[in-house]
Image 1 (cartoon, rainbow, N blue to C red):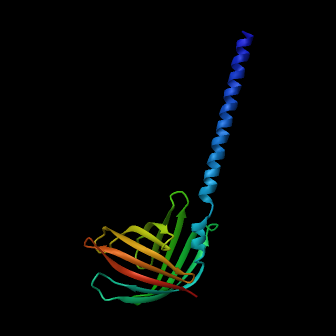
Image 2 (cartoon, rainbow, N blue to C red; image 1 turned 60 degrees about the horizontal axis):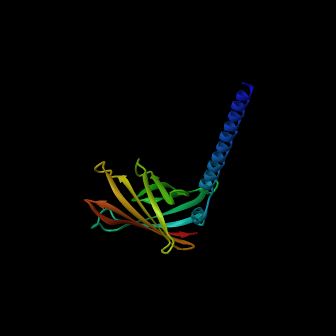
Length: 192
């Protein structure tokens, strides 16, 4: 009987140690995965390269047949939260009123996608888009939905953000109206 108890005790100890070892391996793998997920990488450096003050020239169209309207603003771009996210603040004049906006851009190391959020004082909604980077063309193509202030319904939009050179960026936005996509905005940013 003593040998049976000893054998059971040894097996239980082995099982416990084996479980602890497996748990330690799982915890180590989880920690490694989180470290990789949280570490800023090349795409975060791409965003960090835009740190600074930029002059912003905007041209926009209210619909496909509208005459273009223009506006100027200044943006300040910086990295936040340990270089993991880009935050851009805009100030200027839009259609005769003081205009302020904030844009945040994240790059998700796991999904390999950018996410952009945009808010401004000309509305109460948030624009959210997801995009991918094409290194050959140096563009990020974003796709998202926003609420149409006239109908209250979600409408699709698309943006193509191009790194023209070290001190120039260009964004072309396309909205959808009556089921048809049209160019709604073109923004050229020049670093001060």
